[in-house]
Length: 462
Image (cartoon, rainbow, N blue to C red; front, side):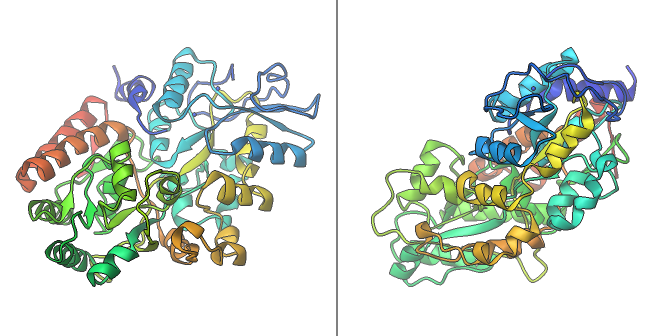
């Protein structure tokens, strides 16, 4: 099997294990997803979850799981007479990607447009066959100035002219903290990681029964963000060199980050609970953690958790920094991509480019979907910046978060990112829960991922 074919096999078969959070027929799964498909009537009989009110108008099929996406679709359809979105929610997370992978294998059944997380994009554009269309040919490249630099770099996969998706939301990396706990024990809210360790010790010495925070070894994108704060580029992929990948998990910066958290665990300053579990959410709201360093979208989830401790006063501030060189970082975010099975590629591109691009839908994104915007016009608007969040004691939280979103410069992810996440979770668990040697464990992880990359036909850049 040729190198290109081995890489393609990884995308269509191996991608079935994708664990983050993507329907139609026909299409050109042939070559490099040229976007030449042109059948405006192919979706005339498509089944839609939403009600398409304008009859006889071309339909574009969409798979997406954003909260309140039906309202977004209805707003778009109301404003357009030339194209209508036919939306279906086929599930989120691995369920949606598995269905997309099944469609890729069958060469039919995929949607025209699909929601894809930024870190998953490389999985569908690596190799000889690209299953997402470069929509710069339909004017997507002219949209660049509307978006934050980081979110745009995430969809160009190397910063070139090709555009494989349109950004829709992001997750500025920040720190939620319990102001009432810090006030009660007379401890200063930390602004650096050195101060964070010191504050954790002080809280413990002064009788706080919980932990200042939690290090979750299964925090996939969260841990990439922690490394990025040290200016460590742990994963690298550029679509213009599709057979090359970069993996750097043995740098001094990476080892410093892992040693830092290992030491805090040994000293009893932080816990090591798995994140996104029911137990983790319960501990956030019951006062077990004095801080949570995570993506901004977590605020919306925490608001909906029952059992909140009486008198809790939450606030949000910048994530602790290592020093003045610490960059603004991001955790998570989704995009809209056009698939190579789109029946009329140009119309699909119009939907991907325009679905969120209206004042009305940007408002839905913020107020109903809970998405953090990546369009500069929304980020800089007075109503957004001055919004007072009741859950955060009426703090103007976006005044903190917007500069983080606009300061983020973009990440790189691997075409086999989920495999990398699975392996890094195993390694990080050994380090923080078992006390394994940081250097040798990270060396082993590096070798595991390099070997896997080679088996899949990639060359690891040195």
